[in-house]
Image (cartoon, rainbow, N blue to C red; front, side, top):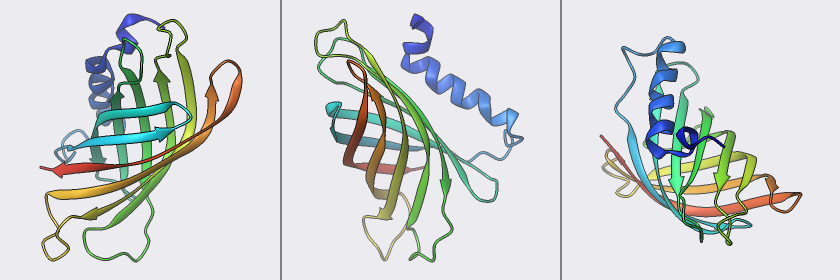
Length: 163
């Protein structure tokens, strides 16, 4: 994979450049930043993500993420999530969509890719004051290229701050 694609800054720039293509450049909301901890078939992965909510109906979230596994390079991923219009309490939302990720391997020379469905349930930390501080419950299920194609699954949680 070219070095430019593995760079965390490159993924963020690509996400920002995608907004004008969707006709939302002037009205895109400030990002929500998240710290996350996922565990599953790719190991334990702490990471960070930015969530760019596009003002379309239903709401679409572009979510580049960066995480560290056992290797020497960070892993990267990007997801396009749709907010499912469930009747949820104020400040709660559920989003699901495709995700592509590239993980470093344990021996520094066995990177692997993952294509899966990512689901995130978000709710405010203080229910009476939905606003800036949120908890995210995260799950992913798909195909992991780790010494051949296998089922990949991960679950975790995160803290997200909305500007």
